[in-house]
Length: 553
Image (cartoon, rainbow, N blue to C red; front, side):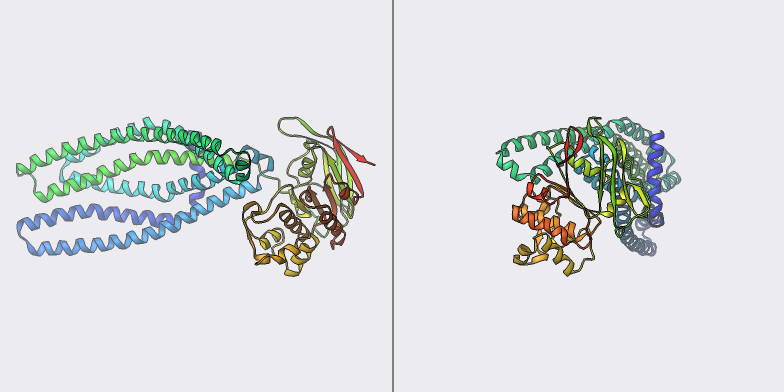
């Protein structure tokens, strides 16, 4: 019960933002429900007037019903427009909040989830919850109004049929509860399988060159077949549960309908009711039965929605980065970085770094070497405050101010990571990613320092050239130079190059590294590389080996 309470509290917190749009929708739905019930009464009067030959009353009721139909059309149109606005606003708000939580969460927290997992929750789960609040909730209230008004009207016309109509309600409730738990488990399994399925396709398409190079097309199709088979099994399982519950509900509905049809037919034959009354009875019976049926059929969707709420709450349980104020700014020069007896281990407690002590000053270029997996990139992650030292501290100081490194200090850092880290879009969008207001002159200068301007000028659309995800359309060397230009344009007092020139020839690499001296703000520069030519430009070179950092002579 506590879990359900927390889930309801979570959904109510979001519902408050659209409550003033939701209330009019509920009111309109209530009016439409009332029109539906009143139409049944008018139908009775219309038919009775027609059978008695009263033409004046027939015309009167026809005009009245026509007016109600027009009101129904207008209100339905307003409800449709309002519902679209309400649902889109609600969905956008939750998606924004979840996305915000993800991007501000601690970096290590992201390792628990595949990127497709996040995508599925932000898209599918949010859509399911949106439907619960903006559609299902409104329908539940509307159907309840229809049920109550129809029931009391039916009691007035025929109490026996009214009581028979609602006897089915407890049966509907019991059937829904019996299948509820199984449905929730199955829906969670379906979502997890959807994540596996989408993850497989995403990774296969992102690494299509590897698939082809290793001739694994057939194997990939076999894996896809296995995933699809499992998806089919789960969908059939969910359908089977729904089918069993819906069949039971349908049987009960038809049985009740048959009983009421028999009673109504007998009463009409005996002259106890008029033909108009019989018509009204069936319309009102349908107005009672349909809400009960629809409410019962909504149960699986409601269960699915609460499973989605649980999944989004799990995302919001991710620990956020601490927001710590800083007096340092990009104008804080000269800067000094202090690694003070820093040790670090990941969650498996395997030591990566041990007792690292290092001091780097503005204007210095420091080289970092070591075998693959020795901890070079981990050291950079600590400097970027993506991870926190297990022991020791990393300090950054300027003048009389000294602060422990935190996420806010990333504002002082420009970074060229390993690999291809470009986004789909134009070259200009990529280069200006860290400095949106850069002038064309500043962009050109950064590109020239990164040896990227020459090839950009040769492109038909130059800076407006559109590239695909991961820089499709560029060579590895060109993509690397764009990433370097992006870092050069974001002028910061600390510059990190993590294997940033690995795809470049030696002459281009030397030209770029010599360009560091031409940067307006001489930064602290940390270069991870194995090329002797690059190391020759460093003031100091350190080697990471056996978790220790030692200076190389």
